[in-house]
Image (tube, rainbow, N blue to C red; front, side):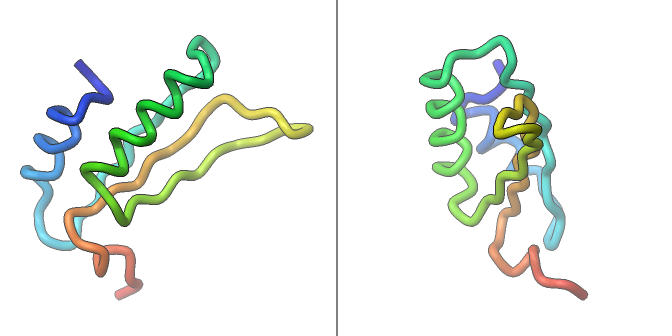
Length: 77
């Protein structure tokens, strides 16, 4: 299953040094509680993760989660 702790840990275990994972999360058919739970699970595996979302008039449904095995993977090279 996607968005479980096991899924995110498996993804992290397969990342090469300096690489990041960018899963896209469509939230339009989820409850706020489900989205919060999935984000909390993502941040357990990727504590230095980033979340980007689209908003139009204060509403948005899609997010991109950016996770890296190491925090320094976000630095420009």
